[in-house]
Image (cartoon, rainbow, N blue to C red; front, side):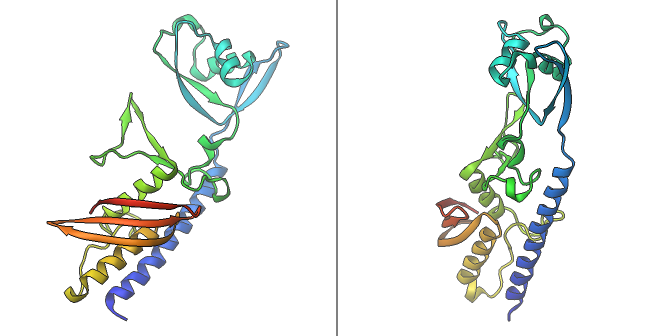
Length: 241
C-alpha cells in the first residue's frame, strides 16, 4: 500500500467521523430549540398562547394592518397581536411603508427543520439548505439579507466548494476539500481521477460518480462529472479547479 493509499483511507475515515459529529451536533441543537411561547388575545378576549418556531420578513405597505396580515398569512386575525408583540410595535401608525417586519412561523415546516445544522437526519430534506455563495466566493447578499440555496442547486454548490478548497485548509474539518499534492508523476492521471472522485463522494448526498473527465488548460483543470445522488437522480458538475 502506497503512502497516497494510506492517506486516502485516513481521509475517508476522518470524513466519516466528521459526518457523524455533524449529526450529533444537529441532534443536540434540536433539543435547544428557539421556539418561544407568545401571548395574544383570542377572539373571546381572553389571553392565549401560541408557539413561534421561526419568522419570515414582510415589507410593510400603507394599506397593511396587523389583523389583515394575520388573517392572510397566519389564518386568523386574532394573531395580529402576535405580530405586534413579535415586532415590538404597539401602534401600527408607527410603521412606514417599506419597513421590514417579522411574520412569525407558527408551525414546524421545511424552513425550520430541513437544514442539517438545526435538524436531525429524519427531518432533513435530502439536499438541505445552505448560505448561497456568489461568483467571487463571498456570501450572496440582496437587500441586506443573506440569500440561501436549496435543492439540487445546493448540492452543485457544495461540490464546487469541495473541489476548489485544498484539504487541511479548514479548521476542524481536516478531511474537507481536495488533496493538492501530487505523488508519482507517472501516475498523475490516475491520481487526479481518484482524488477528484474521493473528494466528490465525501459528500454524503452523492451515491456514485458515474463519469469523470478532465483536461488541463494552463494552471486550471477543466472538469466534468456525472454523478448519481442519494435520491437516485443523475446530476452533472462542470467547472474549473
